[in-house]
Length: 419
View 1 (cartoon, one colour):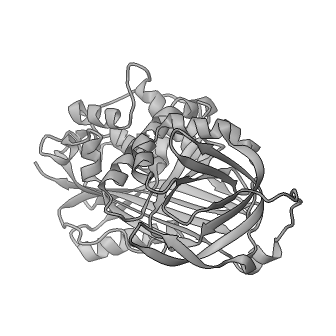
View 2 (tube, rainbow, N blue to C red):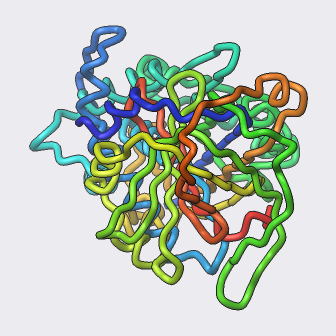
């Protein structure tokens, strides 16, 4: 898939910093055959990740559309890459119809791709997404918290370690407060303090919790001057206007107006291998954009954005969202895993089902003081007045890693003043 290959051409530059962090947790309780696949892979095979790119992108768009339709005017932020990776981990412990529903929910068809190729693809994606550099940090991983005395099947442990590099910790779920602290401290450390309380009100009958975390921090390539940031109006809807701190820059950008979807697409680049689409629908066309989004939309934007001068205004914001994903998963066709018919015998050999799935993400776009001010750069632009793009009403954000061609985060900024 060539959805994001053209991103490497971007020259659009800023020097604000954006932080994102995410954790996904799956609770499994004792309630109520094991699916065994023969998995062989080269330790690092870039072609493996390519085979799942379209599926991960389809999953991202479908989940966004579901969350947007269920939203009651709230901000949206989630990591489709993280959620899809964790669901793929669950494939290793499920069988029968439970297994088939997750495959379909992930937008895979086993007549077109082998299951071992799915796990190899996510294994390589995990490798490609891990960056620790001066101006760019991206860390993603899994951890399995197991109840004391529970012995998971060795084949399951071997596979989640081999393909997903999962950490495994013994946990006293019979002491819920102690277990909550252990898990929350772990996630807090992995997300550099961005997510401090992911789990609460644990059931003492919990058998295991499977978590996935992702942390991203990147510097825009060219700065907005902090001195140009000023308070302006943001039009939440025709009845609501809020005051926001609006960042401004006039210079060279990549942008495109999609006449079919009635939206302006602005593409910005970080130091490193991450890019962003800021997508601004025409006023009163917000719902139409949500309903019409597709992977083909992303392809079209990547192909058609062109370099030109512009005057751009983007609000500073810090948002978070917490989701119970049982409902959205059911809309993706993943239902049995939450019932007494769930087949999770590939984990422990015991009858298990999921009680709930919780997903929490945070997204912050802000200035970093001296670092941003010290990197201010000038750009030569034509004397003619450039077009102006002001993101002063609800807009959508897609954040990609171009090295892995993966959708890291999707967000909808409905009201920048809501935390």
